[in-house]
Amino acid sequence: MANMTAAGHLVRHKLQVHFDTHECRPTEDEINGMADDADSLARQVGNFPVAELRVLIEQNTRSNEFTTKLTLILPGETLVTSDHDRVMHAAFERALGSLEDALKAYKDRLNQVEARRKAENGKIQELTPGTPIEPAALDAAAAAGDYPAFRAAVAAYEDPLRLRVGRWVERYPAVQAKMGRGLDTIDIVEAVFLDAFEGHPTRPPGVRYGEWLEGLIDPAVRAFEHHPDEELENVNMARSACAAAGPG
Figure 1: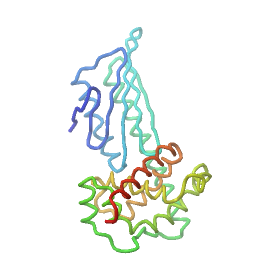
Figure 2: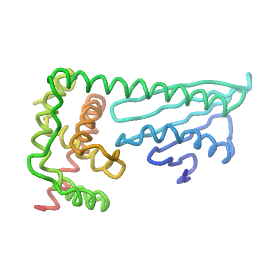
Figure 3: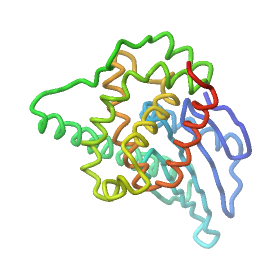
Figure 4: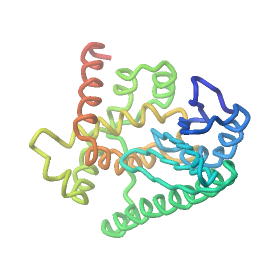
C-alpha cells in the first residue's frame, strides 16, 4: 500500500518513490495510480538494501505531450528510462516497462558475476561464520534499530567476509587502486554489515544468512566505486556508534 509522506513522495513497500512535475499538475488519484503500477517494480527491488525511484513528468505545451523520465537508484547502480505520449499514464507505463527490463538485465549481470566467481573457485563455498551466530539476537537488534548490537551479533562473519571482499575487489580496478590509500577491506566489510542491518527485516526467506551476506558484497563495492567519500563517512559513523556503545 502507498503511504503519502510528503508532497510528491510515496513509499511502496520498501521502495521510495519521488514525483517531480514541470508544466503540469497531476491529480492525487493520477499520482496514486502510477504508484500502484510501480508495485511490481517495488517487489523486484525488495532485496536491495536501498532502492529509490524518481519520477519526472514534463508537459510540452506545444505538442501537448507528456514526457516521463524514471530514475531507479540502487546501491552502486542507477537505471534510467523515459517515454512520451499525449496520455500521461501511457507514457509512465511504457517507461516503467522499460525500467523493469533494465532491472532484469542488471540482475542477470549480477548473477553472471556470481556464476563466474563460483566457476573460478571450482566449487560453491558458502560464507560461514567463525562461530555460530544467534538469529534471535540479529532479529532483535535489527527490530530495535540498534546497529552496535547487530554488529556484535554478526561479528563472527567478519573474517570470512574479509577474505571474500578481498577477492571481489580485484574485479573493480578503480576500487582496488584505492586499497591502502584511504580505503581498506574492512571498510567494505563494514558497509556490507550496514546494508545487512538495513535490509535484515526484508531479506528473502529460505536463503542462508551467509549466502545473503555474500550477495551484498558486489553492491557495496560498487557503492565505493561511485561514492567513496559518502560510503566512508557512513562507515566511520557506524564505527563511532559502536565505539560509543562500548563492549556488548
